[in-house]
Image (cartoon, rainbow, N blue to C red; front, side, top):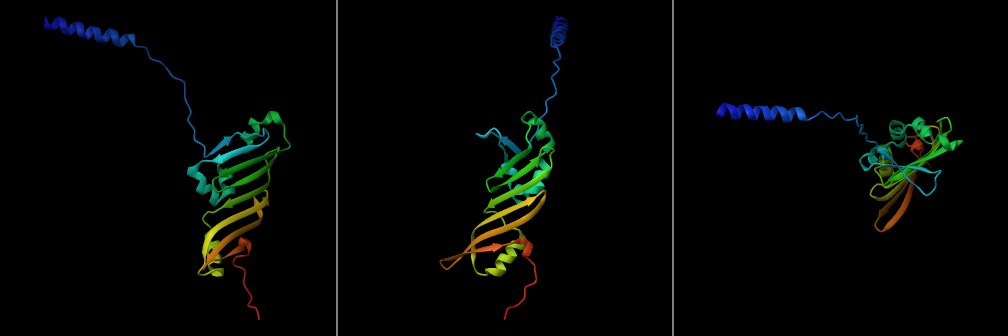
Length: 184
């Protein structure tokens, strides 16, 4: 009797395992982009938000970040039905933005940047300390613009305070390290 019960159980298991078919699923691609296209009220405006996890990298080197994570060729392919002469694309984070103007062929024409209250580069921090030893930085702003991937103008505008007084220091990073001549 035990043998009959074991045989029946094994037959039942083999029949039920044969009834289950194999379902083949299609390949799914999962991607993560540090920039996300956001909708705006203007249909001709293209704005990308930088993911919070990448905001520090974006603020540190906006041009390098865009070159690494933005593909202008695929962007133009996506909006090819609009037939623009140039494309103005804005990349922004909570600290600021970079606007890039591209030709219809995908060449970078010019850029404009504006960032607020972020970690200053070491050379700028050293120059600020040299000019304002004993003062405390309250806020800072960085403005830059350029043609293609070269920056023509850069300026750090930094507000410092000491003993209830405040002043604005402007630092051009291109002039840092220039030899200073003592005045008479």
